[in-house]
Image (spheres, rainbow, N blue to C red):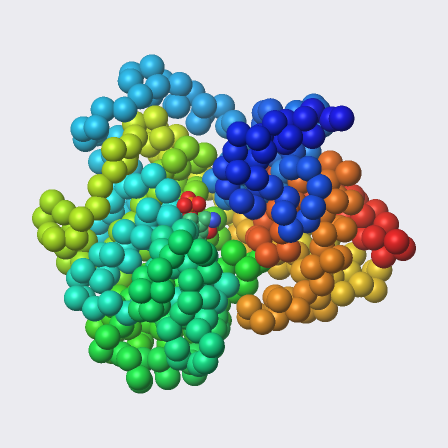
Length: 428
Ligand code: PMP
């Protein structure tokens, strides 16, 4: 038995499913999850000392590559000064100033420790500030595991949602309207019917939790217009796409200003930092100034903030995003080329350092289209790539991530492996 298998067996005895976050369990692709020992640059090593090129990057944070020496040094220096104080620090001020400077729609920001906390708090704030209960979200977007966001669409158009998780009372989700992503007509109909009751619309402006799906410009513009007209709050959940698709996030690419933004992943550089922020008149509703309560023992943790600040500094180096986008596009151009060369319904798309791989003829534009991709072929491809030392997200419905350390030669190795993998699975 391999070390990964032994660890997985042991893990399942002490932890439900053997993992601390479900997608790590390889549930949708089958097989044994790899237990990671160490990581450096674009590579990770498992418990059997097998090396992989990593396209998960801790699900987004590792934008510089793993264990960047400057980041590790900053973390070590901060740790030596004490791990947590439960009192404000200068580094938190610097971090907040940096976020506000880089994302102009954010006038004020509060740091939290996970993306879930960021979206959950932004939602409560939107409800508290508008004194309304209803929220709008889109099918296929994931915003963390807060109760009112774990919702699937109701049975008819413009009906309120049902919980997707047991343990969530219907009472918590009955205020959540779940609409189709990239569907402007539905959004207009929802506002026509419920406009004065809608506290907020929350959206991934580049969706990464149903594989990578681009919002259309018109979809986000319609959302912005309707929220303004009805005094509802527009929340961009940029936990994944913030500082990933460009320095100013998706809002910079689309040139649309949300009222609130949720951030996570990259801003922590691999340690637990997330944030929510936006218009200062809305943020003023937060405790201790206002009546919306939100707090955290480890919020703004000094070691985590040192990691995040150093990461934010390094991604501002000139050409950082043009190089990152170039390398990501090299990968997806290569993969698209393989689909054509081999005559397989296989394609890829990239925005900044984020990419999607689809077993379909064309890049999907909606949740319904993503659901039609060939998940069986993905499963086989995933394992054929893993065998060849390429570590992709273990699900057909997750985006992938390229880091600044994925060089041209690393990308070429990946494309060569993908060619072999596609040949292998199409002859099986
Ligand atoms: N929002 C989005 C868009 C995400 O991708 C995620 C995590 N994948 C979250 C929120 C939740 O973040 P966390 O896992 O840090 O709670």
